[in-house]
Structure formats: structure tokens, C-alpha cells
Length: 358
Image (tube, rainbow, N blue to C red; front, side, top):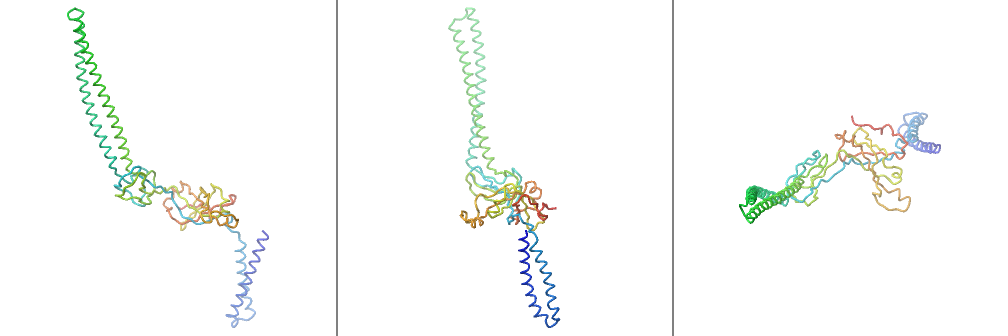
């Protein structure tokens, strides 16, 4: 501390002496003919004392940002590229750039001739199988009626046989006719059941294709603002083709680039502050990401001097609840200054205390 004060004093003395010499020269040129010589030295001396006092205060005053790293950055919102699940032609883009959308909003509609053809085929197959079911049901009713008749004849034949009115052969004939009628009913029921199973399969196919067609309407997975339209009507997209880029307005951050010695003193989760240019506010933030590799060349160095030139990206994240409340003030691309303490025990200075817009 004594060494710092002595150095400040020596710097002040040097500055004062240099300034005094310049003032004397100026005074001699402009005032020597107008003022007595005794005052010629007093006026510069008085001015010099004031300058010296101001300079000493400037050199001796503590740095309010000592222990706080700071750098410039731009406000960024998390970006998501929304894509189509299936290949097809873009029929319509329903949103504009800059438009706010809610989760589930239709962003685009894609057409697929393949899916539409499959749906038509499944619908036709279902209709045909339903007709088969109706015919089988009618056949079952007819066969059941024949079975009832055959059963009555078999019962009568059995009674007549007991009364010795017909032969065993005649009885066997009536029983065989009954059994044949029963088998016919069972065959008709099997045909109906098979057709009904086909109807179920056709319905499942229709549901599957309808789901595909439903997915051809590309929807917003979350609320946000449309940043760019990445496709336009008429474009043919592959499966996974990007349609719209969407900004998550609840996920705001800035990225700073700090030297390696500074980054080594900043742990993840550290408190931070962000000041937006032109906005009288200080937003709270946290360090949520520190790059593991240098962003600027040289990336690989051997000497200590070169290591001080390495710059690492540090991400400062604004809490989601703060972003949601002050969305009207925060816009992507806003220039800002981020502040991070390299010593967590230091208190934030008064001008970096959290101060949100009113």
C-alpha cells in the first residue's frame, strides 16, 4: 500500500512539474507585458496547485471495477430451427419474420402426393372391406335360417326314427344336412371376422397416414418470435428440411471474450451483471458456460506470455423470469457490457447493483 502511494505521489510530482513549466512559458508570452513580474509566478502556481490536487485524487482513488472483469457483447436469444418431419412441397408459410407465435401455431403447410395417395388407397380399401363385412353378415343370417330349418328337420327325423317311421339312413341324412348348415354358418362368420379384421387394419393405416398428413402442418414447438423464413412456397424440402428459425424469448444471454488469466478466476454459476447500452438498468445474470478452447488464435501456446493472449468465450445468462417480465425492453442484437467478479467476496459497486427498468 505504501509503495502504491509513493508511486502515485511521484507520478503526480512529475506531472505537476511538467505542467508548471508549460504554464510559465504560456504566461511569459501572454502576460509578461500586462502584469507585475511577482504575479507572473503566483497565478501559474495557483493553477498548478489545483491541477496537482485533481491529479493526485485521480491517481490515488481506488478503481471501482477492481476485481471485476468486463467486456462488450450483444444480447442473443436461443435460436431453434423448426423443420419438416417428411419430404414434400411447401404449400404455404403462414407466419412473417418478427411475428410472435404461441406453442402449437401452424408455421407452414407441406403437401405430399405420396401420403395423400396412401390415404386414398387406405380409404378405398376400408370401404371395400366394409362392403365385404355387410355381405358376410347377410350370408350369416341366411345360413342361420337354413341351420334352424335343418335343426327342426333333424329333430323331427329323430322322433320319427324312434317311432319306427323312418329308417336310420333317412335320419342320418337329416343330421348331415343340419351339420352342413352349421358348418356354413361358421364359414360365413369366419369370412365376416376376416373382413372386419381387414377393416381394422385399413383404419390403422388411415390413422397412420392421417398422422403423417397432420405432421405436414409444421407447428411451433414453443412460444417465440420468428427470426427468419428459411423456406418459401414452392420449395421442395427433404425430410428434416428447415422451414422457420424461431427465437426463444425466455432464453436471453450475452457472450463475452475474456483472457485466460481472468477466465481461470471465474467459476461456473458465478453472479454477473449486464448493462444494456441506452437503457438505464442493470440486469442480473449468471455464468452458465465457459468455453474449453480458446476462441482466438493462437489456440495452442507454450510460453506464459502467449497464454495471456488467449481469449475464451464466457456466456452470461439472464434469469428466465426476468426476461419474461421485461421482454419489451430486450431485443436481439442489443449492444451491452457484461461484468463478472473475479473475487466472489467483493461487493458489487453501487452502479452495478441490480436495477431493473421501471
